[in-house]
Length: 91
Image (cartoon, rainbow, N blue to C red):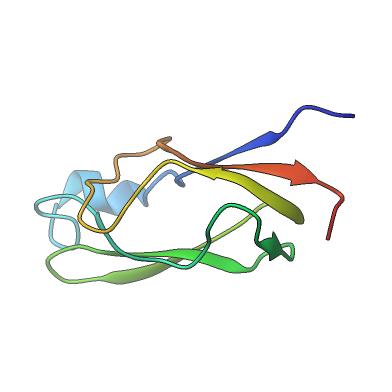
């Protein structure tokens, strides 16, 4: 059986770093839409984040069964943060 795949937070747009207007204080998790045992489709929204000005849906890059979730509502979400582990191909 293949090892679970790490699903990580995206790299935020370069403009967030240069002007800071959208991301001012960084991104925070506002909604976690998955739990261990859930089956997800490719590109399904699994998380919602918010900054002081922007709300963002974060999709999964793989389809499969959620093994573990590593973030919760209220967490800061820097780039490349581990969000979940997904066992590929069980969807």
